[in-house]
Length: 123
Image 1 (cartoon, rainbow, N blue to C red):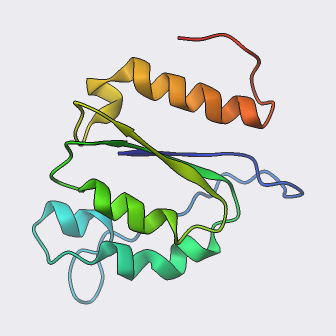
Image 2: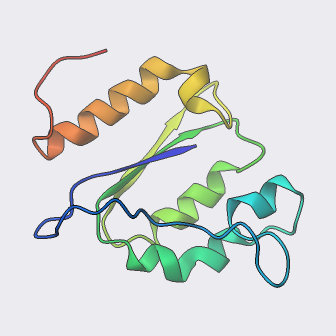
């Protein structure tokens, strides 16, 4: 899974990205909870944080991801105010950017072209 963010119109650049804490009073939180086998529910736990995002977001997800199934991405799409969609990559799982780098790059390039961040070209 991978998510790209675009520019926030009218905002000042910031080096601070949305950060997920790695440990909470009830144990690991955020994506780490999934990895250590905690109960599912990160999408619900993060819905409030997702709603705060003000940058456009595009999800590129491996269709065969069993660690973070694509249904989690489908739920997150509806939680992010300016989500530009979900691009499922067939034959890829958790490390979609390593398994299918050309597909990920094409989706990223198309996303950034929308904002005029880059011009034409392809992978």
